[in-house]
Image (cartoon, rainbow, N blue to C red; front, side, top):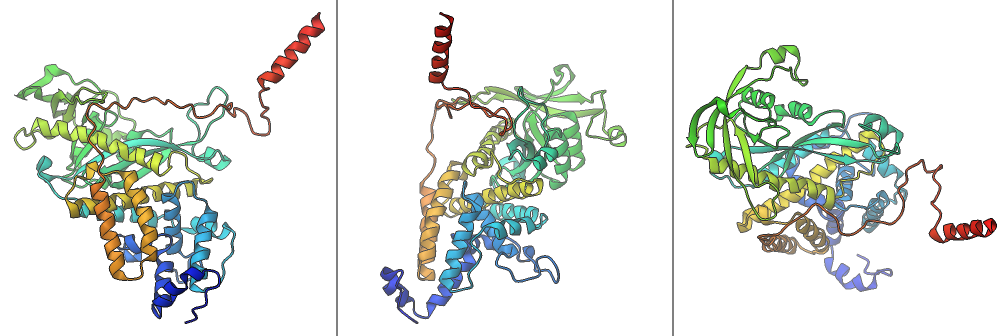
Length: 488
């Protein structure tokens, strides 16, 4: 091996010490594809996820293969505000380090490779990462150890291109007729691990209830579905019971207390719930006819007061009717834990930058959403590993702290010269995550308000080519003085 390194003379001794292992080290660097992502998380994805086609698309040996494009896109999502050019520059550095053939420095080939990614492999990758995180979550006797899955909705914005406007039209125009296209999301979480199991998206003209109706086939018999007031209605409860799934959530309408069947305890009753006379918009006439006219549910009322929480007392409707197997205290505690997973959507929007998507076509917007959720699951998987090994509560672990620590330790992992050192670095990363817990903050208030004004510039309320800047105050004052002087 040639020890001459004119561009990096300080690395000469280190590279020479690698000896014959240098080629293997370089191959490992290229295989890990940008900061150890593939090297650390490829085991949670099925080997058949990136098949090579026999002919036509994805059949040639390219620089941007499906697998490399997937991990590069995922790295870009994990590093918000990073451009496609930055991804290409890292690939250039890795390939040059290996001594391979130079690639085009433009990011057009990478963008076209992202467009070629089959949309069908992303839901499979999302489900695989969720299962990997769930396997590391310890089982408990909470609610008889049954799987609890939370459904929640949100919305994101995207670039204001004609294609996005056509796929995601505005519900109502703003006062100036401008705005960004918005996508509605309904997400299914695992309560224990915080991983995202499945999702559906549509424009704002589609209700969350309709999307949840389509997501119900992702639930298994024996699951417990947990939802907020938007999902707690008679139709949802009946449809879930037909699938063998129980429900916990706040009621969307007031349940008549005069129809109590039996008192189970203090603020705990069995109640007959009657079907509304108005047919549901999400069911066809045949399905509506099969909905029972009456249903017995359980109403639990209790206090969830905590310092900083807005809701102090809730009334929860559930189909878990046995008070001995499912005490009222556990039902209220399950609903209180639902609020913890509200922060998962905040992690996606704030930490991973999903609040404003960047792709300019509907097909790429869908892929970008899935990659954000896959990235979220991989961070949750890392948190579950640290929580499982060091026996700490995963609820106390910081999502952003985990992501920041992985970014920094990945640089050291790339420079590790032996497998033993990489194992030590990974163990140290998990110890760091387990020790860096979010402190308990009793009495802390989090008002929904902002203190810092974002910017002082006017809103772009017209098309860019028609917009005219508002005159500055000094210009207005000078013109006013000239007008006053002309009137004298």
